[in-house]
Length: 162
Image (cartoon, rainbow, N blue to C red; front, side):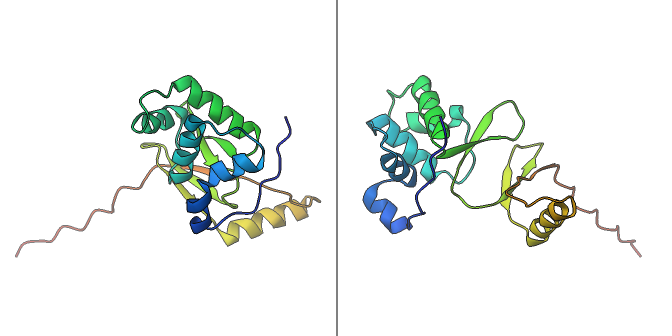
């Protein structure tokens, strides 16, 4: 199924009146919003991380003990098919999810903890554009995922005792 263009972002105040950001996008696309879909949409909209389906299910169970993992999987798949969510593979064997209209950004993934840091960098953007131009292309998009290990703090020099 082709992805449908997303509506323009709303302010947080507008979201609180009409529902979560994801719920608003679902309604705009004509999706039926059951109570459980609404709950999953709210949890995803509130997420400041990139949760996987199991983490979404865990968070949903804290609010509704009846929600099944199958419902979470089906809802996430539907939101991905509709272009509302984007699947991310940061390693570790589990797909994680990001709101598709969050704006252009990149990810640095800590390979020890799985922690994901979002960032933007004008120098990288200029370099990507320059590379595409040098190779005879007009850049239409790109993704950058960096995988790293946090450096150990530098050891302080030992003081000699007098």
